[in-house]
Length: 267
Ligand code: FPP
Image: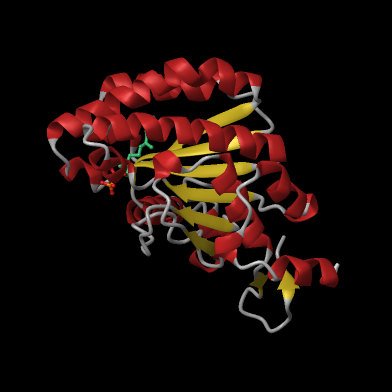
């Protein structure tokens, strides 16, 4: 086992193969992350570089999401969280915001059949009450129609902000304390986690951040406490199966210590 890990270390990250079969051969299926989070960034830059409107970049970003969801399901990764729209994204030009809202509706309608076929369960996390009615209805439909999916949980973060998620958890806990259903001493990390939007899911093992940004951008702040970060300059619309496999190989080379001293291989 150790020699296998050592062998994997010999190839610097930048030189990882671009061949899917070769990358798959480097992966240890027993040590895949249980939960991968991804910040789908760089759609705008991708489009501008091509002299196209930003909306074309967002559409191309949907294709990347489709590929990553497919591969995560094929590999048996249990959960994928994808940041689609942050609470800060309302500051974008109104045309871009409306386009993204329509894209969510279109996504729900167009992807449903494939998501069902691949046994994906979609859960939308965020402050849904702040979304237009049409989008809320599309989300409700997508969640309801994919309820039976057992292979992969796809958490789509829409109108999501981690600080709001934490505030919402605090409010829910405070209400229970006020009603006498919970004692302050009973509140611990586990209880707190169970009041977050991601309740029931393991924390992400891996966060993928495309487009070269070194920020967390208010995504899953509590859940990322021990997550491995993978930053790549590749823009999200160019991120596909090969890039996802490279991220997974890179993840498997890390040593995760969770604050301790023992050198635990990942997984
Ligand atoms: C960030 O790129 C991306 C977004 C704000 C939207 C992400 C949305 C998608 C990938 C598609 C929609 C998803 C669904 C589920 C329909 P950016 O525009 O900030 O890129 P930039 O930093 O290069 O400008």
